[in-house]
Figure 1 (cartoon, helix red, strand yellow):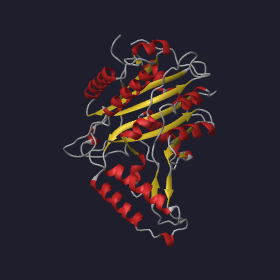
Figure 2 (cartoon, one colour; figure 1 turned 60 degrees about the vertical axis):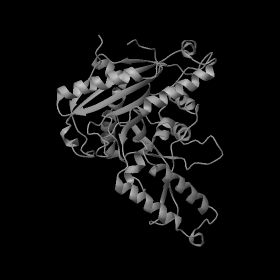
Figure 3 (cartoon, helix red, strand yellow; figure 1 turned 90 degrees about the vertical axis):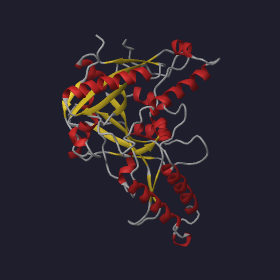
Figure 4 (cartoon, one colour; figure 1 turned 180 degrees about the vertical axis):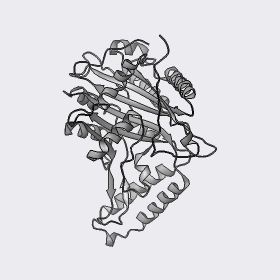
Length: 374
């Protein structure tokens, strides 16, 4: 069998009609692929340079190029594509099976036939450019699709089901309801994801980490509001500020942030990080993930992260959105709340990182799920 399983459904997220033509795309198609992790002995054979460090640098470059190639918008309109083309990286731990990395693809279309056709084309394009440091093996049946995608974990509806989002921290400059708010950034080091994989693998209960990615743009009114906010912050007087020595640093941070957001030809994505489990998730795991993804390798401090959970009556909707690779807009104090879920290309690469196997005995107490063949 060579054709991957395509999960078809007539479905739309009623909260996400972001532009012209979106409401016409009523059919959704999903596919799932296991990402096979090569042993270090096999991986090192792929190097072009003279040592394993060169291989590591090459692999990171291939991942970055792959992620950047996922960017596609309607340039003539300056807006998102109505097909909701979305990519999710998932790390799934079912105790006893090893940590299973997976890639899930989603696309929407006007008809069932079009949805199937475009999903297969999406898979084919993904397969052809996926970093060859890994073995990409699609699901060929619905049972395989459910297992590789972790849908069985997300469909679990018991009363102990736990679900939360890790977000970049939002910092109010002043302690009043009219205060301007600064946002942190996603940032990590070359090896900072290692403690995430180790922590996920250590869970004694089924667990899923989901990182979703979809192209977007900054609209003109949003750019204008960001520029206005920068002007407001620049005019805050030190004598009216509680922590006078802190204000220059906050202004400097925000100036750099706005320059990064408003730079010409920047590529932006929706980017969200969620953890889900049929049992209560250990708080230490949120700390590990949040710290690893908002970590600065230099001496400059970052605002950090925070964790937000749905209210009890919101859990089914959040779970449904994760199953369908929809984006969850959980609120923000930013002047443009939507931008709480938007990241630039550097942030995408900081968050979406594929595992690897170190030399000798690998990571302590970590095994990856057995590789499947394509």
